[in-house]
Image (cartoon, rainbow, N blue to C red):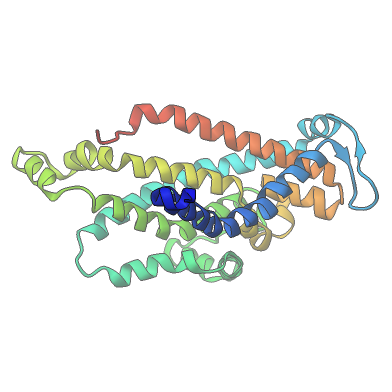
Length: 301
């Protein structure tokens, strides 16, 4: 008598594992080919000098030393951090306010559709539309001139306003997704908890600060981590919206710097080193966020 006949449950579990591996295999193969393999190649190239042709020449830590002393990389890191520190708090705060308002409305389908439309729109299309709106004679500038009676600057050609314009467009494009996720978190709060607090005399602001925010803090934490990582990877919006990283490299982000070094200057070793620096910066910021979550994130026990 075979083992499968003697132990049918073991045979069933073995067959179930094989089917599970078969379903997971395409995704695992795709991750290996399009994620792990490129990462391994980039990590190797970071220690070499290579222009895309011939054999890479090993240079050790020279590329990292070159990038640490490169003022363009420092400017890129500063611009990226400013972009993240401006867009993430403002974007999440605005999304929370909108989610709270929409959560109290029954017929909110149209509002959610309008808010979510930028999320499913191509970043290139968004950049092209806002590029026209931010022109000196565009709709945005014309509105400011008509309402405030002042002549607005050329937003994308001014080194002091180009990054602010990128922040504005980034917030506008991301607020819809954050609002929908925050609404899902708000709908998990039991109405009886809020009703009990109202009966005890808690006002609207008190209920929001003492009950709503603590109960949705895990969602806020998750969205803040994702939003920071996304901000550190900003490229396509800047690439299309502002020509050549803006005046005086005012909108040059880290990913744009990686693209410029690799595909414009054909220095893939330096470009790969910059990408490893971006990875280290992302891990550092994420670690700080996970360390700080113990103070403001409240999980249900």
